[in-house]
Amino acid sequence: MDNQDEINYIKRILDAGETNLFSYFLNRYSNSIYSLILRIVPTKEDAEELTQDTFLKAYRKLDTFKGDCSFSTWLFRIGYNTAISFVRKRKIIFPVIDENLLANMPDEAVETIFNKDDDENLLQQLEVAIEKLNAEEKALITLYYMEEKPVAELAIVLELTPENVKVKLFRVRKKLYVLMNGQNL
Image 1: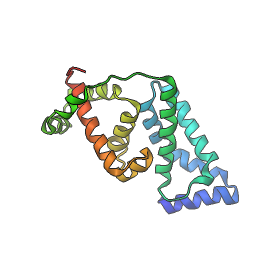
Image 2: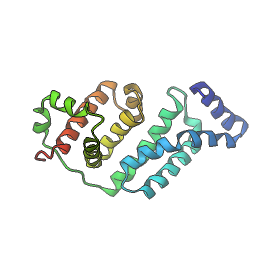
Image 3: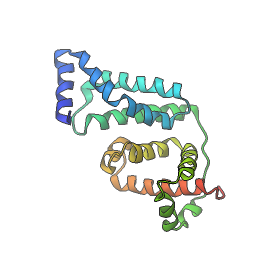
Image 4: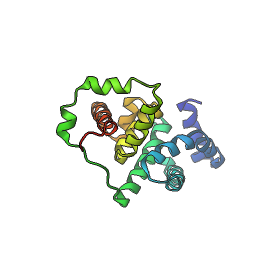
């Protein structure tokens, strides 16, 4: 089903009261939304609850969907905001990395480590490092690498310019490199 079909479903839900059609969106996007939220919040239970909250908010605000982006982008934006708000209220503390360390890190070193995608040990180190990122950074990595969202769509979800998304991706990769190599924080 393409974006236009989804827009037609939304119109039918809003205009004709065919609320059962919303189950299509639940079935299609719930796993992806849950995966994103799970990367941001500390527990599976929180992620499950926030996923439900996301779909409830989307349903209640369905009339505000303008169709200027895909429905999935709009839904990811709601999920992202829901999870970030939750984390901010909890005031979870994440490690701070010296900005000079990131600025002076050679790009080649970062690229070398991230081009070894068949190294099981490296993947485990990466998972541990991702858990140390702050909520926004986890969301960015999840959406870009795991959900394979393009930069333009990330810009909409995160309310950033595409250029800013690219810069943030670059910085997060450097931060992951530092975390994986246990350099001084």
